[in-house]
Image (tube, rainbow, N blue to C red; front, side, top):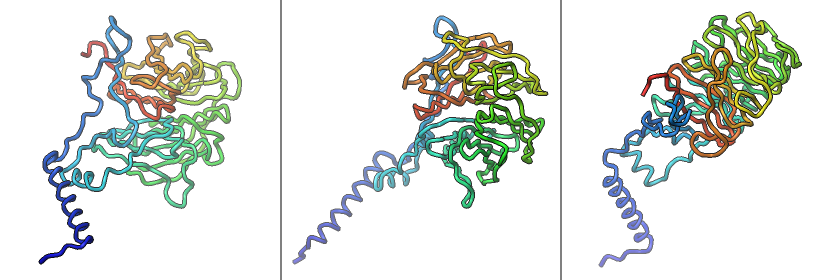
Length: 357
């Protein structure tokens, strides 16, 4: 006669449970799960300006964690998830700066998490980049830019340096050591092999060569044209003109290729076309200027002469709403990425050229 001990019963129960899980996986996911759709182009219900005008900017999605990559999962991946559970979700804490590269990767500086999030849209993978062991870790990463060589530059306001990564994520060292006080927004001028850095701690724009030589210092503290009061973000237009978000002077200043002042855009106020706290700046494929205002929780659009065209976004936590937005980036296809810092995400919008469906 066969006698089963308690230990035998426990082992048998575990075996049965495992078999049931596998059978469930076979029933619900014999072929695995397919990739989800990223930023569905048909999702254009939320757009600006509102009807009856044709929208020029539409909200198409957001990035908040590694799960937003919607990579799909193989059959065996489904089995593993059923038996052992999913990996912990990796979320953003305080995204401040964002940019993309030619390989469909999205880079997001996260000052709260002290990391650089890397979302690979083509491969549907997620990673975090950090300085190599032995180097100083991120302390307050604020902004990110990508050069034509594929190198990635990350400003660290607390360490007062620019971290440099090669395109494969390997750490290359720092720039600006001893020449920066509190670096914030950065832009790469590929035609001059220069890195242009907004340094609000110095109330200046610092121009660095790629080999780490200070080539120019623009401005000093003040309110006159060409002077700054906590400049935070910078961008270059197609003509090579430099746009500076002069945050506490409540304006954007425009400089020519020789860094001579051309004009200013905006002033302090609470009406459209005015600023309360201008931050990130960027350009769409038509050359229109986008300016993020952290206090107004909105993005304002201006034409090349500085005339207000429209604005989008409002305070809140839903789609197309902001809570202290900071950085902005517009890629070559006209996709708009906005770092929504207190909502812990990056908003994704599409810019619709005139006549597009």
